[in-house]
Length: 87
Image 1 (cartoon, rainbow, N blue to C red):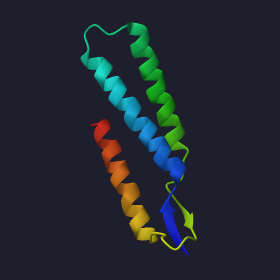
Image 2: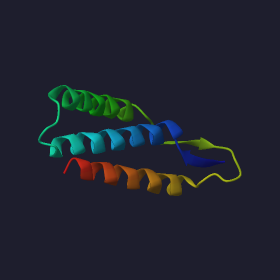
Image 3: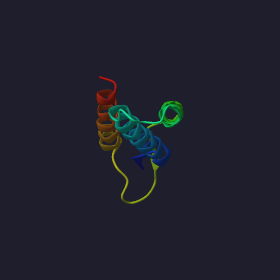
Image 4: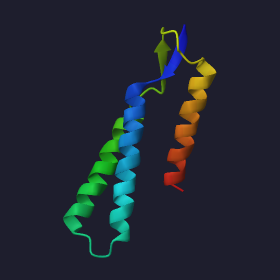
């Protein structure tokens, strides 16, 4: 029996990543519509809340399952990338 990174966790991570990229792009634009900026902020915070509720590693019974350490390393890599967005 092996492990894998929870697909919902990965989806939440990608949603947060793209919400952050959108927010950053709008913050660099001096002519951005305030309503668009507010919507991007709300989307970013919504993406954060979903991410925080997801378990990172789940059981995988398939033949191509990762070891628990491999899955943990993948989650740690994603978490380190996310930490850099808040630095």
